Image 1: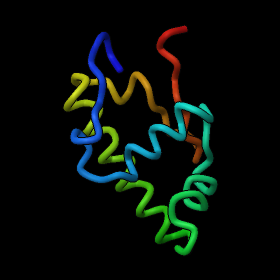
Image 2: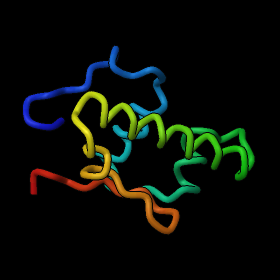
Image 3: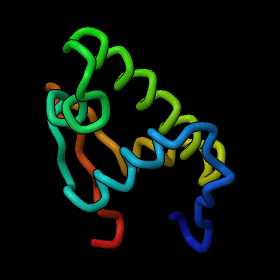
Image 4: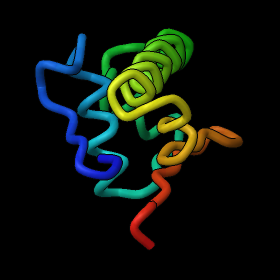
Amino acid sequence: MRGECVLRPADWTHRKPAALLACLAIKRRLTKDQAIDLFWPDNDLHSGANKLYRTLHELRQTLNKFLGPGSAELVLSFEDGILFWMNLSG
């Protein structure tokens, strides 16, 4: 959410990016391995990592499209194999 803009289910092309965003909003941080185990439990680490990176790409694109350019960088960070949710409200 940025200002009064809210992402609706119809704004998402796939469910996994929205689910990943919801998970990060609740947990605040998630390791790459945790995300793979949670969203792709039947995949090996390499395959799961590829799916995670594609999901993150789609998540960033959706945030930037509907909330404005640069929105993804304001709320998400992926550093050293850890995903972070950055709370903008303080």
